[in-house]
Structure formats: structure tokens, C-alpha cells
Image 1 (cartoon, rainbow over the protein chains, first blue to last red):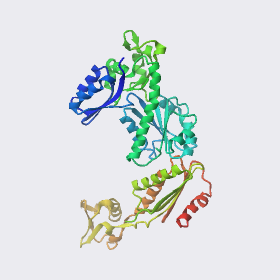
Image 2 (image 1 turned 90 degrees about the horizontal axis):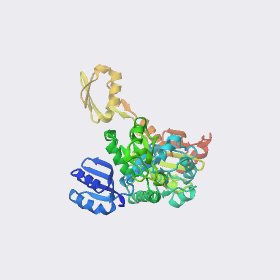
Image 3 (image 1 turned 45 degrees about the vertical axis):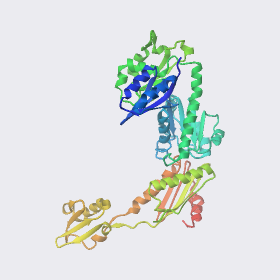
Image 4 (image 1 turned 45 degrees about the horizontal axis):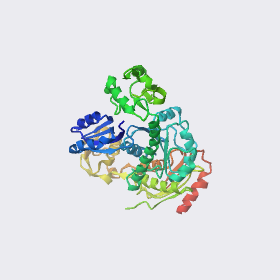
Length: 313
Length: 194
């Protein structure tokens, strides 16, 4: 079986459809396509052996292919609030940087996430964060505050967490109990853009920490694979459900590591999705749970592992 | 050009202190207050928790008068105001409308205002105060401190008068003697008595 690796293709609009066709022909998937003026960015999965071929074909088009470790993941960037204290710097800069590494990021601004004693997480925020592959918590400058508020902010969160804060990594490790999956020290509340080399290095460290955390989950998935590869299910949905192509969202179907978020109303489309035939005689409901998402009225599809369904599409 | 002399941040947490030094400098620069604030002394202790900022402003800019941005030419029948800088045109028009009546204030173009002569005292027209920049300046200074202080510190007490200002904030109720116990010592360090 060929291994699909996440890559980002960056090039001009001119003849980019040829690259998309090529990826499709090679058995890869384009998860996200961004067209910005004259430029196109394709977040995709391609067979490892064929990366050089894509590079070669993209060369006359001045396109470049780089490995992007976070393609196909949806990450929640959790900020204590969406007030001027935390935005636009830190929260937006981090979200944007993770996007460059291929992730689909959603900013979660907590209603009452600020303060030390008064910090809180409500059930809606908890459920929304739990719908992601990973949550990056952007915390502040004081050790004491992080120690006291973090247990309240993580209550009920089941997805892996990466914490950032101004204290150094060792301090973060020592004050957070039980431990979380990743720590990046030296990023606190700041009021300017991340632009100095040492600040950008911190962002690279964050991307590394996030991808390391997700890799452990990927290893688990390799041992017990999903019944259907999420990007593959995305392609099927786009082909079979006509309304998906009518959506104006940047990502009408968002690919996650273990599922998909479909931006169609749950009440109207859930049954259609459940009865969708994904392979000969296999309905979608056989390989996945179709659930209402806490994010607007979207649909969340959680794909079941092979060990549960004994089906591999 | 006068510049901010110093920002001092004190805190038991060293990492936090450094971070807040940078935050304070960034915020003052963003809001263009470095020329206005002479000293800023901040004490922040997350364990209490308390945030205290005290400081001194430079001399406040005086009130803006008509003669600062316009020439007043008094003729036999009309007074012609030749506007040099439009910044304060809107408040000037408001004042003129009250004084002369809207129908009597003629504005043939952006930089000219024509008024009838002999209606209301034209002698002091040149010295009429149009705007007071210190009014908005006070708001800006308090806004800057709100912006610097940790967001969760919602309970606050603030003061700004003449050239002195302070801002105390916490998540808990502030003790009634907080000004005496926390603010006064900060002013003393700057050599100022509150």
C-alpha cells in the first residue's frame, strides 16, 4: 500500500488544474484549495514516491511542493477571550502560522477564560474544542495564573492539548498537573507581531510540538486504521452530495484526522449522509457515526476504526 | 522632542515582569502616548492579585484656539476665516453655528468660512477656544492602562487629574485603603507626592 504524505503545493493560478488532476490520478487527495489573487495553495495528500514527479511537473509552472505536517488536521486555537488583550497578536499569529503548516485552525475565544480565579469553560466551549484533533491553549505571562486557571480551562477536554505561556518549558511542565501532551514556553501575552527571529523560532517550535503530538496519534491509527481514510470520504461526499459543491465556505467539508465536518444542516442532511453508499454495499453509517456538531448546525462525521467495523474501504 | 523617560515594572515573577515591560512599551507606542507620559511605574503581583500603575504626564497641551489653525480677516461686511488645518474644523463649525446661526455661517469651500460682520463680538473670535485635547487624552491614558493590565482584573479604581494618574485593578474586591497602601509608595519612588 502506498503511503500518503501531507504536502502543500504553492504556485500560480495558471494551469494549476493540471496539478490537481495529477494528484488525483496518482491516487492523492486535495483537501483544501485556496486561491489568493494569482496564487494557489493546495493542501493535499500524495503518495510519497510521487512527490518528485509532482515537483517535476510543477517546475515549469513555478510551483513548489513542501511537506506540511499538519495537513488534514483541524486545530482549535483557544484564547482566554477575544478582547484586545489577546487579539490580534498571539492568537491570530499562532493560528496563522499553524495554517501555513497545513492545519485548518479555528479560533475559540472563551467567554470567561481570562483572570486567575474567575477563569471558566462552559459546556459549549468544551464540546466545540472536543470536536477538534488538538487544542492549542494560549496562556499568559504569569506562572501563578497558569497554575491556578489551567485546571478550569481543561476540564472535560479529551483531545490532546498543547499549552503556550511566557514561563519556560520546564516551568510549564512542572506547574501543569496532570501533564498535557505538549508545552511551548516563551510565548506569553504580547502586544506586537511575531516578527523577530527568536519569536518566529518559537512558532516553529510550536508547529513541531503540535506535529509531534499528532504523530503519536497517527501511530495509534496506523496500528488500528480507520475504516475509511477521511480525505477519501471527503471526495466521495463532494461527488455524491450535490449541495456540498454549492456551499460558499472556504472548506465546505473539513478534513480531520479521524473524521469530517460537513457544513450542511444536520436536520436536513444527516439521514441522506447515513444512507450514502461509500463502497459496494457499504453505507456511511456502517463505517462512521453521523453526529450533530456543536458548531452551528453542522454535521460531524466520526469514522470508526477497522477493529470495530471489520470494513476497510 | 520629549520622550517617555522611563517605564518601570516591578513584580515578584521575573518572567512576567519582563513581559509586562514589553507590553507597556508596545501599548504606549501603539496609542502614541510616549510623548505624553513622562513616567510610568507598574507593580503587578499575580498572587494577591493586584495591578497598580502610577505615573506622571507631561504638561498638558493647552486649549486649541481659532488663531492656532486659521487666519481671521475682518472686513467691512464680512469676516473671512482662512483655514490652515482642517483637524479642528468640525468643532469650530459647531461653535460658530451656535454663535451666528447656521444660516449665517457660509462655507464656500473646505478652507474658507464666511461670517457676517458686526453680528457677534468679532474681536475675541481669534481667541475662541475650539477644542481641548486634554479631554480625550485622559481617556486615552486610562484606555492604555486598561489595555496593559491583565484582562481578568476587572475591579478597578482610576484617577487622572492635572499631571498625575493612577490605575489599580484586581479580580477581587479592592480594599478601601488600597490607594494609601499601594499607590502612594509607587508615587514616592518617582519622587512625587499624591
